[in-house]
View 1 (cartoon, rainbow, N blue to C red):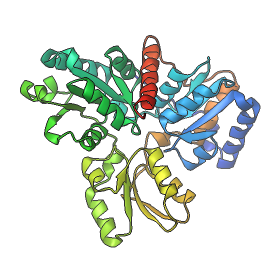
View 2: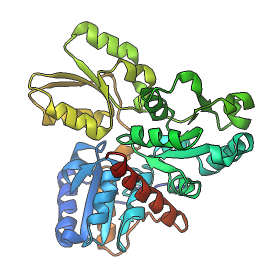
View 3: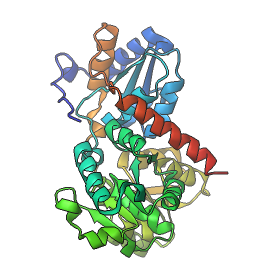
View 4: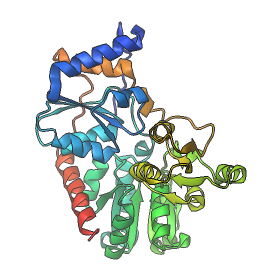
Length: 370
């Protein structure tokens, strides 16, 4: 899906002081009351989280938005696929706005819908369509969520990936997992699938750069995609931390490489990381493998613990951080003026199909937990 570029902000937004921006944001929020909801992903800047109604991961926020039946406008401070999720799950005629169209997701962009469809057709040619189960990580475009609905597949999150992948492997001979190879590999390995039964599909090469015999012997086919932020952690960094202070526990996100996850004391979703550290005893020491805004926020919320990033030179998620106070102020004031900009709309039939796939995932998450 082609995403339009964000045009430069007009005057006076780039030159307003932080205090002026905060006051203008609060003015619009007061004007609309419950008619407007501001959502912030865990990785957003501290000031954006502070001025939002709720923070969470992408699916949590989309579900929250769907429950806001009084709202006319949903301002999603996250990235493009997340705003799509809110539009897919909304129950009314709410207008979903993304403050900066440049806030995309590098991982989601690594799985172009046309490339995935071509890969699927090549896989079907080799093994037959009844042998393959497509599973897309929720960090993907609406088009790819719709694709799994059409092909009898399912969506997963980093929280429920284990249950979903386990189910899928029982249903079909081959699991086709995209766009994040690391979540797929770490999840399958935890379920006991040997590495030699996994293969990496390179979308730039015919048949993923694999021999047909390799495809036939594959249990889990992984798309060649990743989260650049989570690729900035290494097992060597973990060794350095433990050598300096063995009391540190390592917790990482499953989008990290297998080597990092294997050396971690535990790994899980952003929600898992937040709750695990919050529940740990006072005086605990944690080195965290996820985006720095969230690490800093967890540290602030747990002053009785020592919390650092696994990578001492960790950078922020550049696309998430495109959303700042000037862009949020501009987006809100455009809504108030009756000319909302950056409206995110998922067209049919993708919207209905993607909604079916998300609903199926949520239902399965409950069923598989019993």
